[in-house]
Amino acid sequence: MNAPAPTTVALREARKREVALGYRVFAALGWGDLGDGHISARDPERADCFWLLDVDTPFGDATPDKLVLIQPDGSVIGGSGKTNLPAYYIHYPILAARPDISSVAHTHTAYGTPFSASAKLFEPITQEACVFYDDHAVFDDEEVQVQSVDCGERIARDLGRNRGVVLRNHGLLTVGATVKHSVAWFVMMERVAEAHLRARDPIPVSHNAALYAKADLTTDEYTRSVFDFLVGHHLGES
Image 1: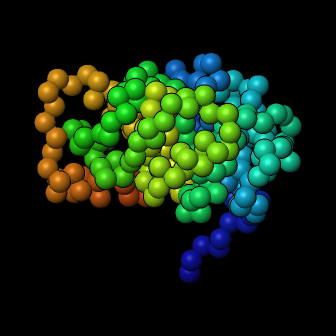
Image 2 (image 1 turned 30 degrees about the vertical axis):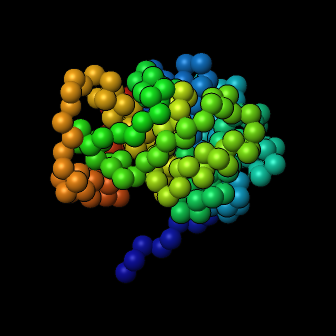
């Protein structure tokens, strides 16, 4: 017999826990020390609303009760705290455009942000790079300070059906069916950016080799395990 589906309440709490863990993983990796980033989770009942960390809470202090539920107009309707407006401008349009995903992850990183200034796509020069082979885009726009839903809609349009996007002069962004997917893929994407900045005259693998690696590295089981390893290694939790 199949296991019973989790209740809406249980699913909501699971998503909120994963969001909090994702923020803390980012903090452990040295990201978000300026509050510059965000991870979202679509609410399982109110599909047009999503959970984010309260704007005044440091990433390392993230817990499920520090999250706020944001509705389509950007106001808070659940939890106690304030809306991170840049996060709302980015996450709401992407989640609205992609009913197949439930999470978006973005922050400013040591390699992703400088790589983004090139406005280039990744090449399949490492294992992790194959995850994004024919599966990422570039948002080639000067609006590095996102101040409107309109900008978020343009990001969503350029992201398309991909799992990630390079935001020119800004940084990296990933999406996923779950928080585990978006966070795991963000960490991988940062590694890909690092490889591109460090490698000298890299030789990409072939189209077939990239697709073969991608198929293996993007399975649901593997992607979830990456998130779990990150949580276990950096936070000592399971």
